[in-house]
Length: 525
Ligand code: FE
Ligand code: CA
Image (cartoon, rainbow, N blue to C red; front, side, top):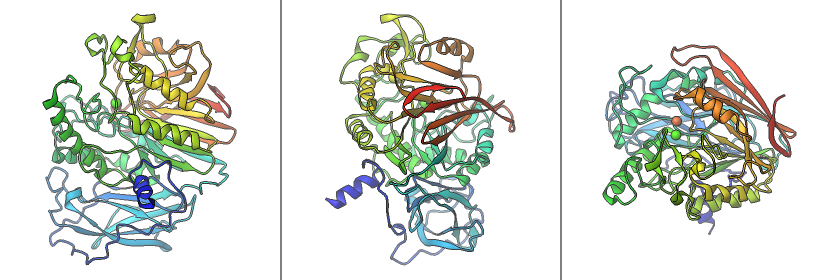
């Protein structure tokens, strides 16, 4: 039974990350290491390093060895490669805390995931990798406090949606300068589209459909220095949205297919398996590699008694998007009869049950639900039965949203953080989520995108901005949100760059919204 529980935690479906994990580095092999291949290029750390999914006593360290991202073997050959890793309490690596050697396997694209243990809670560390004489950039990371620690302050940023072709990731240069413990990424880390000659930055890689293609696309994203800089400063906790596989997919149904087309669904599952594999190979996740198209990634991160994060996957298990034949604007249309069924799900049974149990068991002051699409009811036009909503968001899954509201009711300070939509916003989810006249139940903070554009900012700002459950909206600018969490309040700073069309821009704080302990409706300072 203990083995089953441990496996569940590793797979991310356990009810939270347990503390006091005295794990040694699980990747340290007991067998003889392979030699460094002859002729290996000098620069194999072109994708940088990253850390993530921290626990009180360990953190995941990541890198992937690539010297030529356009080559099928990444330019590093097809042999296994030994990789040393080191964690120190200082950035000059004088005081080494833990180290070991792992093997970068070609079957995993020469990625490595080290579970570096023997660390102290709520502490900063530096880490690096070595292959022979080659040394990686140095990353900085931070462990979580002990689960029962009475932590006074947590600073985290959240971000999403970094379409490479839409612009430069200047926001990350500013994020790297912030004083943060943690970054949460809410999906659309890569986009799967084809090269567009007139884009701000045109892809070198073709639109991916198989593992080799997704590896190249991921490597093209990971090669960006601004993105690497933000990974090098903080541990990240990442989830995905649709574009890590394909736009607006639902479960095994691609956007363009109907639910009845079995052949298309089977082909799409193969593509999904390749895409999930590439996700694993490029992110610092505390997960085992996927084995096929099914890959549970939902998990929790506990930050002492101050805050807990519940990280969700709103794509892999969701019911088909209904009413798409009535769409009038992008994914928006009236809610048809088929979308209102009680059985329809956003999270799938297993994840939904896990979330309900994890929320009910949480002892955290602030309970942050980190997920993809807007939860609050946001009618875009019309009234009553003819109301136009975005069918890709929770508005297209009203029964699932009512069940989520039931799970949030009674939880201390529920705060939903949201990506996907490429606009910044703050508002409330109402007690009856379909009835905006009911009392606020939970706070929702929507991050804008790092670079992905929003098509009709003025129209949407004027429509959404006047809704009774919306306090703030900015669809015009790209950036990220910094949250400072203390016992008495959570402060969200909406930070935006002035342009993503050119590589550099100043950073502005567009708005500050404060959530007081016990009062979900945010207010200005
Ligand atoms: Fe996006
Ligand atoms: Ca999306």
